[in-house]
Image 1 (tube, rainbow, N blue to C red):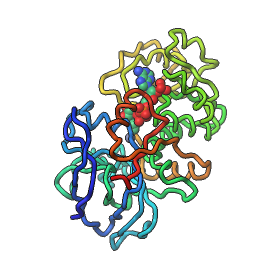
Image 2 (cartoon, rainbow, N blue to C red):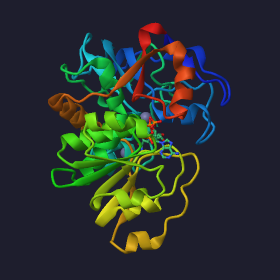
Image 3 (cartoon, helix red, strand yellow):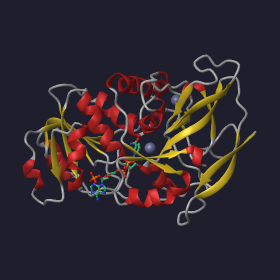
Image 4 (tube, protein in one colour):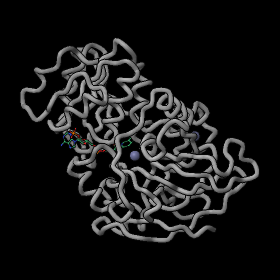
Length: 349
Ligand code: NAP
Ligand code: ZN
Ligand code: ZN
């Protein structure tokens, strides 16, 4: 076993603090990665504070991981020591069901996805620990390559925020002539705006923060609607084809459904701890609209997204923090005061 420095939550109400975990020795298909940077996702906060379910404490979050390979197992073919490698939200799945075979491991039909943290760990018998740590050991199938042209720290959040917005944009065939709406300009939302713009779509941002307008335009938003204005639904210029809702809190979906055109889709990616208010059926039936959801993306698509970002020079807008600033970062994330993703410099651990 490899003793590893980490930062953990010890209960739902106490601050995160230093902790030591054990990583497995790399097996034949494993890569061992020295973690250089880790992004801070709102899911980390939901999990550690027990907002979805009570996690197993101590809980080490972090699933936007980039680092340097320090050792590889005898059967590893895609990585060598010294390479950069990235790990996202999953570290294993059944790898034999239809979804896994189609490269959609996150939807594993046998419900055997091992999430990067707070999941049962078949190797240790305990739970998995995430990227708020100095080292991770992972099967090479669940490691991705960062295009060398991208800044490593700013690429880290692509591993969750990037793929979670890229996957539905692709699934719903985003391209020129499409009108895409993004709800919320946070970690996921700002990547949604950049990616939809790069795919050629007309992008409308729905935001509760009027102060984010200039940033949103720089990222590629064509139209910005501040939803604090009670009359905001009258402001949309034309029916929207696809809306990706990244909001981390329960809110009324009906006004967003109303801005969709015929056959439009509202896709939820935000995971609020409490349910959204009920949807009015007529908002769907009147224009054959659909309400859907999407979870991260498979490993094949994650690599495709990273390569797309490499080609288009897309990275996240980040604010670098030291590990010791994580509790303050959570408070700011709760207040929507992040521009637009915190990334932890793991050298500070
Ligand atoms: P984040 O950085 O905190 O961004 C959320 C954004 O939502 C905020 O920046 C804010 O944008 C907006 N918002 C906040 N309060 C709001 C309110 N009361 N009404 C309307 N909008 C509000 O969070 P994130 O890391 O992007 O994550 C967002 C959600 O996605 C979380 O629930 C997370 O767990 C979930 N998630 C899901 C997946 C998946 O696979 N489906 C993957 C990753 C994360 P404005 O200031 O622009 O309004
Ligand atoms: Zn995440
Ligand atoms: Zn499977």
